[in-house]
Length: 402
Image (cartoon, rainbow, N blue to C red; front, side):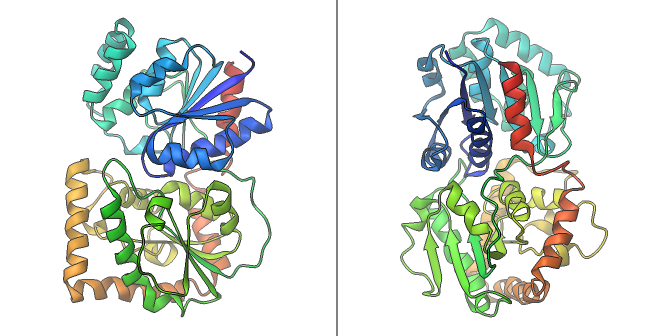
C-alpha cells in the first residue's frame, strides 16, 4: 500500500457526493491515491468529477468485502455500511456528517452501547443485516460510534459515547474553482433529484412544477441575461419540453462550481451543500419547493438566528414550512406524504399556485441588489459554521490518522 485512501458517500441525490468530491480534491493536492466506492447518484457524480484515481460501483453493501486490504484510511460521507467495513477491517475512519443536527437521538443513548457491543461480535455480513433494519437516525448513530473521528457541518449532535470525537468542520465544499467573472446568470439547480425517496417520474414532475412557477418571472430578473437549469443527467436528458430561453445543462462537479462564478442568483431546493457552495462563490440563493423531507428543516436551521425579515434574507417557496419545526421533526414517510400532497395541490389548484407565484414577484425585489443579499445570507450562515473550509479539515484529519 502507498498512501491509498478510500472515500465513500451515501446515495442521496448529490449532497453527500458533493462533499466526497470536495474532500477528494483536497487529498489529491496532498498527492494521495484516492478511490471512490458507492452507488447510484453518488457513484455517477464522483465518476464524472475526474477527481478520483479509481471509481468502484457498489450496488450491495456486501460488495465492500471484495475491496480487500488496500487502503490506509477511509473517509465516509454518511455511508454507515462503509463505516462498518472500516471498523471490521481496523482501517482508520473519518466520518463526515452534514446532517448531524437532524437525527433524533434522544432515546438512543442507553441503546448505543448495546449496539456497539453486538457489532463487535458480529461478522460484517451480520452487521450489514443489522444496519439494514435500523431507522436512518439509528444508522447514523451507529456509524458515529464506529468512527475514529467525526466532522459535521454546524455544531455536532452527540451522545455520551461520541462527544469527545465530534467537531464542527464548517462547510465541506470545494473552493478550488472560484474565479472572478462577470455575473449575468440565474442558475436553477435541481441537484441530484433522485434519491431513496424519489424516482425519475417524480423528478420530472418536479421539473414541470419549477417551470410553471418561474417561467413568467425569470426574464424580468434584475441583472440577468442568461438562464441555466442543471441537475441529474438522467433527468435533464429526459425533459421533453422547456422554455427556449432556459438552457438545459447536465453539469459535472467542476462545471457546476464554475457556473456559480457567473450567477446573480441560484434557485435551488433548500439543501446545505448547494447553499454553502453558492455563498462561498459569491451568489445569493432562493429556495424552490421541497423535493425531499430534509429541505424544510435545513431552511429552519439556517434561519433560526433571524428574528425578523426571514423571507427577505432567505426567500423561499417551501410548501410545508408552516407545518414544520425543529422541535418536532416528522419521520420520513410523514414528511414525504405531506410534500407529495402539497405538490398535487399546486398542480390542481390555481389559487394555491398563485400564492407561490406571487412570492416570486417579491423575489425580484429582494434580488435587485445581489451583492447586498449575498452578504446578508453569508453573515447568517457563518453564525453556524466556522468557515467554508471544512473539506480541507476532513482531509487533514484522515492524513493524520494514516
